[in-house]
Image (cartoon, rainbow over all chains, first blue to last red; front, side, top):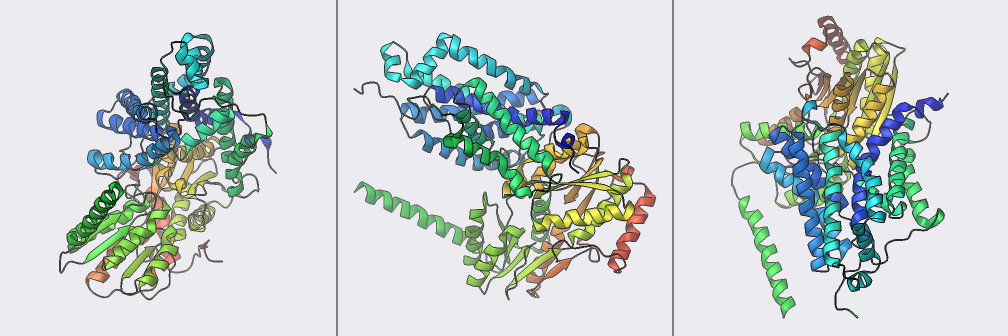
Length: 294
Length: 333
């Protein structure tokens, strides 16, 4: 009774791309940070900050472009907090990241109260007040761009160096702290763009915790993609496809909905458990760099 | 020494914080009502918003002292409910089925505090469950959807995949089949955890998929995730049906109607019972007969629904009330 074309058809591709776009932006953002040795578990929180700021400013000004700019600035600000705590004060990167994520479950509620008298959501935008699809193109262009930057530019070489061996980079005259700051800030920009896509590109408002764990899935995609831009893109597309298929399988295939919704996560665990290849994280990831260690 | 200072500072903060709460609530003579919302939050423009509407009206008209709590995650439901009970509030309202086990616990611990729970089935001498016949209201919007559909295909987007939401889906389906026995219905759910109420992106994808598959009307019962359904309707120039609150104004022209679940009425009248000292525990049921559920007609959607269809639906409504049409309650086996 089930037609394969009910599930696998042209709209599946569109759906996959739409669902993968926020993951790609956030995961590539995470890639910059982690390649430089800073774990960025705060992607979820940065996405939320971008999504809220974008939706709030777009609603206030009526311009999605101002919303996007504001979202990027918010992402930069949050990333800067993460960077200062992790780089300058050498705090535990996972703890700081988690703290940021928890903080941004509450911060939008606080500000939405002040701006809109609501408790965590923003007014709905008109269709013409939303961003056109261009963030989708950005997401797909950022991947080859990142590949080029990472492997064919001096900046990329230095970025990878401070993530693999900060001592060697330092000895070679690379400013480790500066590289790491830049990397974390870039990841803030991209994760905030992912949030803005959710709030004012794909949807027309911010609602509480609307990222629904996409920041963590982006992180999983980054690990799945072995911190390589192209493989990370493929991992994001895989997650997008898995969700798109699960949407199409619901009610069509006679499998309990609960099980269908588990599929992407089970696949992630299988992959992360090492059944398919091994993961090679940057060597100095998670370690603060102290200049005069030895 | 340092630690000792730190601890004493903390103790002072905690202590003054608590007394702050206590003293702020010392307003003798005023009826105090505490309400704890569901994960969707009070401005979900839907279910919780309806409850908020009710308590606000009660506050403005009856002069009660109102305090509310919006839990960020399910684990903070209990402390919020307990805090109100501890402060001996006259009525503590829990919004949403997810609070039933917690209300049951807390109500047992505070037998002298009155509780009300919306959508939850808790039978205790100090708890009043407020239940709705969602299936009946959904039947009516199902009739409207099927009458407007030209493709013979309808969609349903539920929030969390739970029996309560199946009740909406089943009533909708029966209403649609009452008009057109051959109609097909695609039934999808956003998720299986509480985040399903706050995931408009997923709601939009589900609705888009249904519209792509030929559905021309999609009914959502998905809280904030339903906002994505409205966006999908607008983008594909098709129709959506709102839920709980009157959502006709969210996207005028694309919202066919809304299945009203008058949580506001239920909340208001239970507060009134408290104020007039005639609170009774036990189940309160809101159906078509007491306007607890209904379909919404206003200036935003009048152009979408022809008058003879309204007549037809009103007739079916009367027949359901009279018991001539039986709508299946998916929660009763």
